Image (cartoon, rainbow, N blue to C red):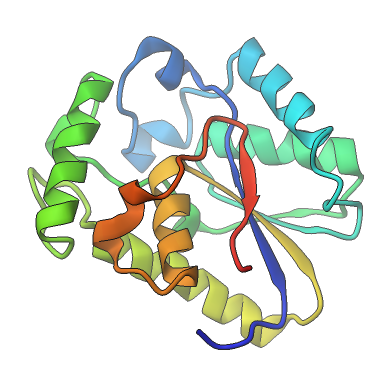
Length: 191
């Protein structure tokens, strides 16, 4: 792993209506306009920020354009007084193909496939290797644009976990071996 010029934090969106209803919402056509945060999700984000003394008004916010992530980033910006939010489609939720709109239990089917073959698209789900590459592309572009910044990436569970495996120089098949980032959870991605 090369030495990076910025500090990167992953911040998972707060509880969304999809989380609350136990369904998979990964299609941008739906996720960018529906299934925003619940009231509990909004409270989670505010509470989580109280433990995030590493963020301040100078932090740079990048976010998925899915409604749940966008609303989370807006709360972060408001609470910290950051200048702006930059929305990047590469930070979107992993697309889960045939399991779109189905119960959360189907996530485990994709995760099992990830361990076996991270390059394979199973049931039309975006491969974990593909997600890891698109998330890492965000880091590569930010490294060319900025230095010495604290960058907060507001995204989703699988994409953030897969990005962390890239920072740790682990293959995408290992993303479920790391501690999961709960809703409104955050962590330093590059140690």
